[in-house]
Image 1 (cartoon, rainbow, N blue to C red):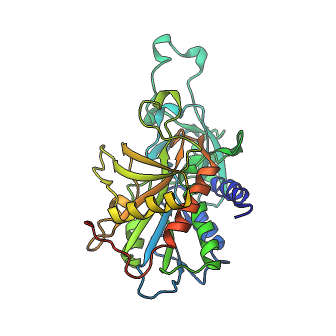
Image 2: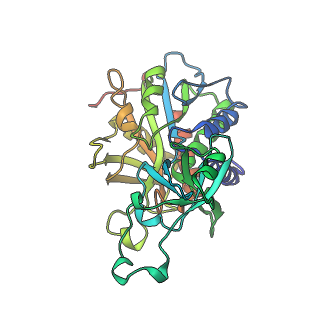
Image 3: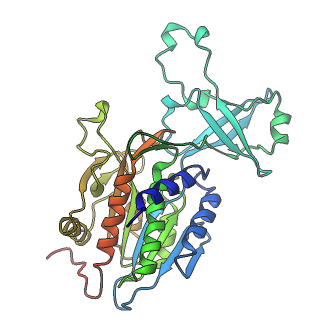
Length: 368
């Protein structure tokens, strides 16, 4: 596994700089398909936009496994263009409103070019004392691209409905930590690419489907479509988990950067989307034992307030055994998400070992 850490740095840098708002994932889909191509003979993009790579297993009777991570990111769409050239936006996904004023954003116009802008903030010198500690609702904010009229904006190909994302950025911090936009979930996509490379050289017993999914940030849509097509015997979601090693979250859990991959033991959204995942016990046993035998660091998560694609994939057809595996990240859904590349390496090693264990006769019984 020489150089794998460097590979993850390079993949994260490439992918976090690609704008791919939920519903507009084409740039990421092209990247992921091209990244899979040298390792797999079968890779396609379905009608929903999911990228599906198939790696045939050596045992035709072994279970079919789907491992997936979402390609999309949260952001906004253009809601209205004002006569003076300012642009009002509608949020798409779980946007933290308190971080928005003063942010740099990127608008993808219909003529193909990306247009830079900033989310305006009321001038500090004109802000009343009682307003200074109030979060401004996103509906009262606007994007300034420097245009002086509605017509000037439209000449750039910007119309109602155009996607808007945080200005893409990537920066290596101290040690092996990275600060970037859309670490959620380009980190998971990076793991998929490395799995494709590994299993191309070391064929698994089970047929593997490595899937980059769409519209996770828009109410978890795309993975269900892929699962309905693939009909796997089990599915594994790769996504971020909230790291709680900062002062404001230290009482929430012990999850930390650098602590290794994360085994999802419970998730429940609890707001709007009343769904979540309690993992299938056979998959918990598999990855828990693999981590023990291989001395792979493994953290555990029981989390209220978030969920992944697995919460809906588990309900496809007659039911699919599912589990969430992930890596910790700080400052989720902001433009400055931080992760530790060592945790991605840990997640990759856990999957290599665990997926290699699944063959004919693997027991998905809920009671043993």
